[in-house]
Length: 313
Length: 311
Image (cartoon, rainbow over all chains, first blue to last red; front, side, top):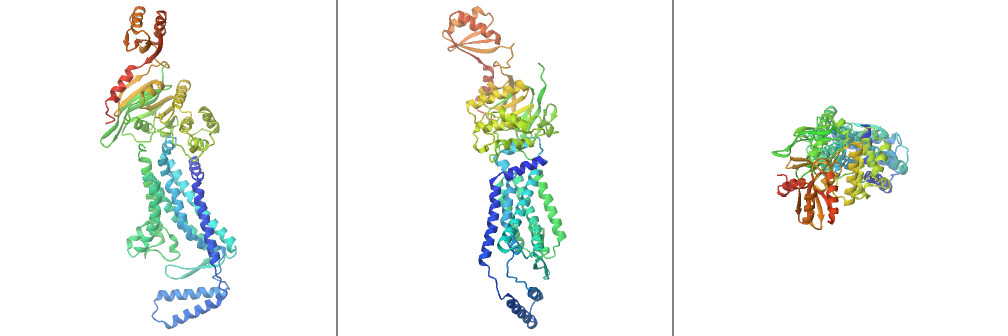
């Protein structure tokens, strides 16, 4: 089994494509850093600005009785946050290496698209090149071959995600400096309460949630690849599912059945920040949905891959 | 010499929908024999081979490799089998050596030593560390064969092995296969739709038409031919009528007939030199002596000439 895995790894990392995709991610990260650096405008009077803003907010809170409670809460949170900056003499407009890394996480769409290219190709390419005949007439069973490919695809996804984290931290440190890991990051939860945590912790937490999304998108690509044996279909379908799925969930969030869609559940970070896409969803519900989807997708891929004939080419 | 059956095929059947592509094939292939599947395109040769190596499921029937059921214990059975189904498709972005390493990792007990051995055997030492995309078709065929030989298989299965090879490549492959069968006792199974190729390569041929086994014939062309049975020999001479007369006079009981410019005799192998000698003594000029297997060709043409392809 370990030998099969090293075979699959060899076939991924001996290909130029894998390294080109990684290079593009590095390039994109550098580009974001350069753009932010050149457009960065530190406000030297930031403290005055924050004090003025807080005064404004206080006034609105006292005089405007028509304000809905959510806005009221949001404004109070903002005052708290501004006060923290003022008290601790922290310039919120100053970019740090750590803050940059959290900003650069928005490149995750690119990352997911690239991971899908490899995951969607890993089974299908064996069919399109005909090497599947050589692969299946060795002594390994089809289950072992499929499993080694799945594990290799997930390892590649982990490698790419970790590479993006390292790249964005390195870029951030080089361009904006290494200091500021302990600076607070403010965010509001689903109920509108303001929370804070050190920016380094916030970054790693987000990458943890990102990796869950990555695993599921890669699994969709892998399943389509194993069932339809076409890389094009696998890559298009899963990238489409990822983008359209997320948009669809957002657009249809007033219907409660939307919560059963995979993409309503893949981004677990929403239970920490921003709230779930459909009201009434819980973390436990999402985890159960994810497990069900995971098992069903892998069973489908396994059943069809092991049972179907390798037809005449 | 009693030979053990390396491969046993029993009632092998493949049906897709209402169409039966392979219909109740049963035969044995002993070790040390080069066995051919001969049939027109679409007769079910490739389907049979794909069922033997587990690429497609069997509707009915069984395949045994040295007594092991391929479906029951795929790993044990395949451990004794090396196969190339259709063209050898290899990873073009890897080198030849990396390809072999890849397949060696999928087998038990195949180390670097064995990889070097098969590379030498197929004569690819010079180019083994080049990427496969730079290889010619002949070199890919050699690499494919090297892959199939990695596990020192007792059974070698090759589907249309001569497809796309030039005459020199075909000859080389033929010599390889015959050596493997005779020297190492490997049972070699090849498929082809070309009669001439099969006659040169195989000891026995199964003729398949529309998924059915039409005939299994032993080919008598010198190597491995049966010493006691008569075979048709064609002798090209300058004076056919004189030659027929000489043969009839010197060798009673031998049927000699004149066909165009050649004399056709039916004799056992050891009789051929005697006939040639008496012709020479009689002053007849001999231009060529050919062994032909009319019966096989006739059978094959009967099948393929009808124009019904795998219906």
